[in-house]
Image (tube, rainbow, N blue to C red; front, side, top):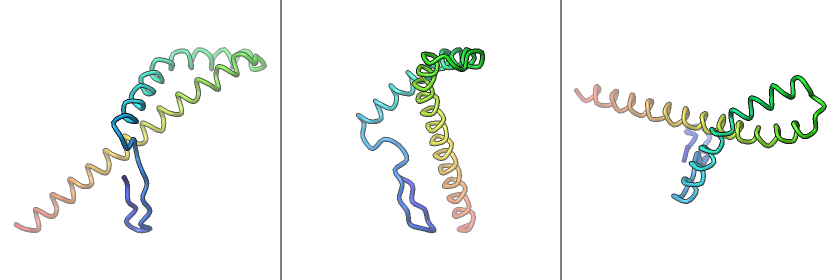
Length: 97
């Protein structure tokens, strides 16, 4: 959960159960495994943009790429949040000395 300190808006930033976390892990693994094919299809489409079968496959594979991109952004947000919390905790400790 991420809470915007200015607006008070609460956003869920990840799975909220073990089952959803497991499903997300499975989708992530599948997405990683399809990236090679995604790149092949993208290159083939550049040569033959009118190919409907390639376009259909590309659109399906793009969903996995988009998932990985959003997942990566979520990981970066979490890392930044943890680093900022750690920095604030260090500042609080320094003030006490």
